[in-house]
Length: 613
Image 1: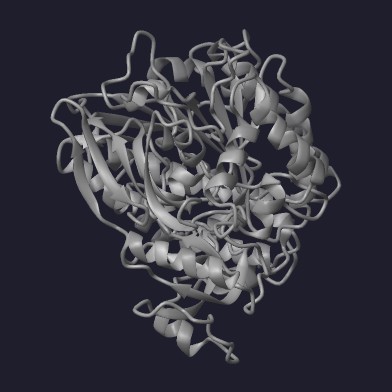
Image 2: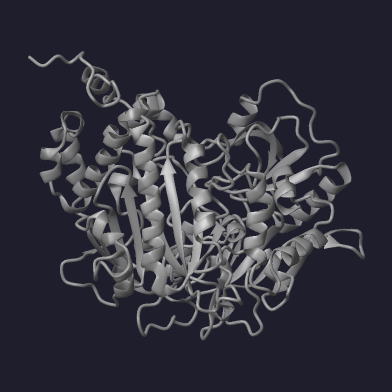
């Protein structure tokens, strides 16, 4: 008889201990944190604190826990309110200026970087969170029949915004995968999806291959009126040079609403496959063929690779414009069509719980388990399950496999754009992530991908040889075009100055950005040092000669050996220089404009003051 209490090779974990945990989420329950309602916040607020002094009447104020997507940023009991109108934000800005407080816009908190508040912000801080998701959510048609547009307030959810557009036969070319993002948050960080034109493809009117921010035709923000000596609402046309600093503002400004150019919706076919090995997909330029990352990108223009740690066959998704339903594809009419990743399967939750409980050596098993579940949900192929180790077979019981296959296979989907572009629910695995954009020639995409994945694999192996497992999630790779202000349809439109994908005037040949994220569970030992090792490689490799590096604002960057968003050289030199390089208005112009429109730093925090100087 097999000894269930004997340690396995999987990080010293016993089968009995693991299987006992599979009946419930157990140690992984923290992955599914819910929002804290105002009533709960009041009940759990703890010791009384003085109310914000002379607070404007008619606006409810309460204390609420702030916690970001991955739980790395946690601030207890901060004063919070939910302004009902843009005029309320003006009132609050003038109140904050008079009282020496700061205001921070808060959406769904689906972010990683400390752009709202920093971890551990004390409850007694003179900072007020403004929840935009309760009232500032209006969406209405704008533009004309010939040039359609949509007007939306800052708290409007991207899921609802795209649904409203779809109801009028409209859409955008690409967008972030989560639906629980506010428009204000997406604009603040230059949110994006994945898309470049295929050979001979021209963007349809109202569509573009840059960020969502680049679609803005005008926006309204709360800014300082020097003549009146107070804050006021002001609308900025896209051709206004000042608008260029507000389009991607990192939370250093408060945009109350924006108008976005949109276009006729496009039906997309999303094909998933897991049959191309890493050695072929990420091969050095010239050594592969049509099945390389760049080869697949050329065929469809829209690609994402999700490479689970310690596995050899990434999950590859490609999207292609397909007006009519292809034979064999599955028609969908709603987003979130990957149930095996939309909600955490019990085996993944159980194993994640063991990881965060200290069994970090299970990282290879965890990566293989995530890959197998994706393969099952996409293709129904049981071969790898049958060939897997005892631990995975014990987790992937018949009941689990039956449940994963119950909704049918998902490798070939077709429908209106939003149904296949939005695929991340709040119930998916809560991981932390770094993020970078590499600006390069389209012809160099395979070289860029090969360089990054090669170094990632080298580091992962180096750490594993030392008995360390700093990564237990996946590498995600996407590609977009750069910002083209013409996509907005506004004559004289300016590019977003702080966008990670603003074009470099000195490198007109750079026409795409390759995006990289490395995902891992928060608290994983060594994740900061691993992040630093990889980041320093990226800085040295993409130094502006053949390609250039910028950070993805919403993710992790500026790593030290034990912290994120902390390296003084990256914060003070590398990031500013990456947006100064190339000539023309850039980092310094954006900082000066943001300071001029908020000289009192009402819309700021200590981290932003440090970053933006």
